[in-house]
Length: 158
Length: 208
Figure 1 (tube, rainbow over the protein chains, first blue to last red):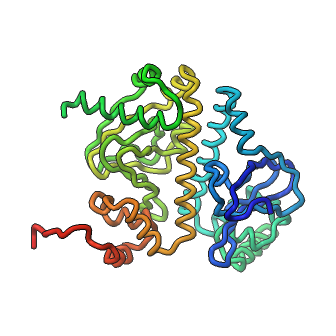
Figure 2: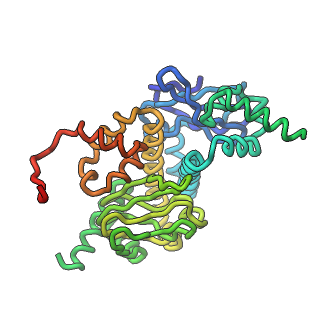
């Protein structure tokens, strides 16, 4: 576990190898909001940016090598000059736009479309991530996920 | 108030807002001012239609506007914004590509707007605004994440009460169907929940 709910996120991670998930607890259910892989940035972002206690947990799913930068070091980096400021600005825009896109997709896509799109873009993760986490991330029941998977398999071989 | 004074007041407000992020002298701010334009829209007018590319970053000086997305033939209100708030189609503006969202006024609106191109000029001209840009976007990100989290992790009742406590005037300014959509509450449920609000003052209905 990299970060627990209630803690203040100290690090922003870039994944060099391995997989990380971000989730929160709704009653006793874990709701997965991010599945991050090689090359992705991951952390409890709002906690990191605001230095307030986290609502989320951040946990490794595989052994990971992470490149981490602390909040304090990041501020020092920004003080180096406008180039790093610009980098920070553009990365933050990227986060914001991903979040926006995720919201639009969630509202507009049917579960089936969501599943197909995810499989097309990240199909290899099915071997690496427990199905219940994938289903939670895609906001569907594990049974539904499993049913779609079978449909996909049968159509691929037909 | 004469229009000229009104604009001066709007700009003063924006100056104060910017100073919350970085040390900015009045002289530096005056260098930025010519890159802004004032845009006025009547009520119930589209500021940006889906399919258009959003050229402008907007700060609301006056009025109320909403941003919505059409999904499964329904308008889903994503944002309700009033004086001092920022409203634009984030993806469309930043990537300069056609927008999925529509921005529409609810009341007559006055916007202080900066075009995408002008914004790039300002970053070049006054590099210290890079930090301001980063911090404004960070704030937007935090707000957005908090809202997403709330939508996923609160009951209808909690969402309703939290919103009404924080934004008590919106009920008078925004049609109920938009508020309900924004809070992801069915309209009938929304009407029912209104009874939870203690009337702030006695009001006499004009039509009895």
